[in-house]
View: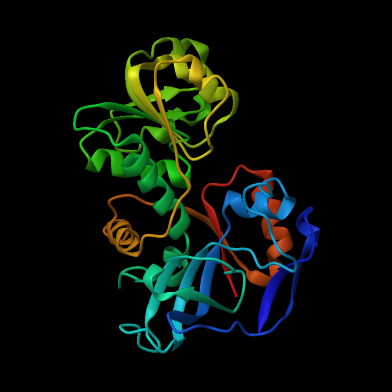
Length: 302
């Protein structure tokens, strides 16, 4: 089969589209023909080596977390996944024509979604929902600021927080306020504006997707006993405040993924796709992704 192999940490030039062995599957695993996958920021960090302290690679490595495709073969103990079934998952090694996933991480794809639409969902929707439901845990009526609200994880967090009855503020750049107003939120805040940050106070929680200096400036806006939920670890200086910090790393959840995909299919929220590219164009796709300025995700078709 064809796959994208990474032989060493470095820039996008380290990614090679070439022939490799078909993956082997175990008793509780499913062999899936990958119909589409997508690029996530963690892919870039794993490739460059920026994430090697927490997610080290053995080379040659195959990157990719979003799985969307069709069942080819199943292990001896697997039931409920007939050949040809359309499936999706938060998985591994998806920059390939075929990959293997444990049966318990796989969910079916809602009929209304095509492979490309579904491929944009697994990692970002799982991360955004767990940021709200496992880290922030808002009560109805509480005010939650979602930073990076126009990003894929942020859009999901906004949607899930609203489902839980929270009052949601979208934290974005000043130049993004008009676009963010299209989200179904209770307010939009320019978090690159000291003036607008200065108007925030006594927030029940922040769901943070961007980290860095911005979240450090925002710590003072959380009320005593409030919560900082983060997908980027505990920020420097957080211990100086009387707040609870909950950092999460997304874990596969097949049933929740299906629910979120179904809500996306019913247009309750959306994860925009900027462009679709061939998997063999992986070097260029990573370069484009690193340059930023995209209006959505890059989907890859093997």
